[in-house]
Length: 171
Image (tube, rainbow, N blue to C red; front, top):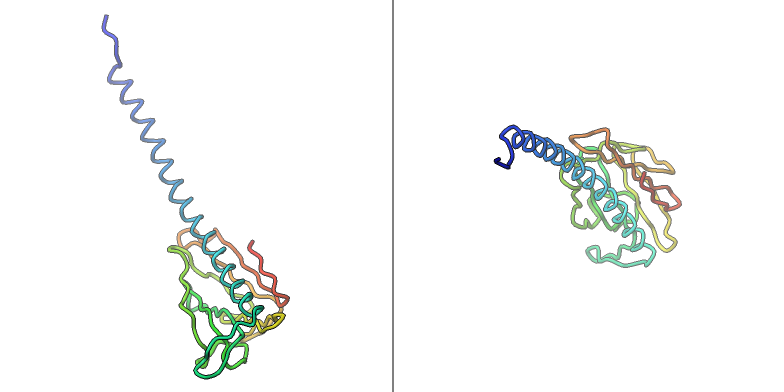
């Protein structure tokens, strides 16, 4: 009497392993994209808090002979994959050519800024010492929202909210 597996049994087992492997692979890709979205949202919130903390410390940065101590973050809908951190050198609570730009912050691959509110372009600026929080754009408001989404799965979103009292939330 021969003991062993038949060819049919081996094919069935290999098919099951193949199906489970492919299901795992597709879930892994989706999980990787979701992690990139979550990581980008937390990094954005962390960068905003960093600008807020620098203003609280009244940290002074050289602005071509002037001293700047107001810090901000600039968003534009025409910049879907990055945002700017800056020192407001002329204290006008808006990012402009007179300000000192820190390195541009890029979002994770596959993540984009899909919506900005209250306007398609705005700055969030923290003015020391409290710090006071200003949301300036084409229409100023008391709250700003930045919606991040996945390029391949636009329904997966994270919303970062900042209000004029300085509170930052991620939904």
